[in-house]
Image (cartoon, rainbow, N blue to C red; front, side):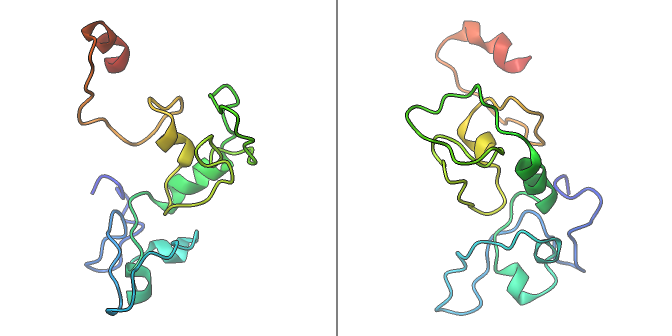
Length: 133
């Protein structure tokens, strides 16, 4: 699959990325935060498969290691992180899965990303060349 071309996150027939969280029982919401470890990224146990994962641990680690773009608009927020996990909508850098908050909150993203747009809807056609370049 395209998110795991080397098969690093595979475990037998289970694909490590992407996957939806699978509750272990009726009382389990499967909403806990996935541990930021290589071991948790491989779907080789029931405990690991309960975490939804759409980005890989490598993707998250690159985000964690990338310096925050200080030129992005932060309004009146005091962003408390120096890496790409801190944004005006996420000043504390709280984690939601393994996504990169700066990439999620600022579109189009300034840094190379593995994601490809399926569609871009615009009101002004003269903006199309900027978005397709």
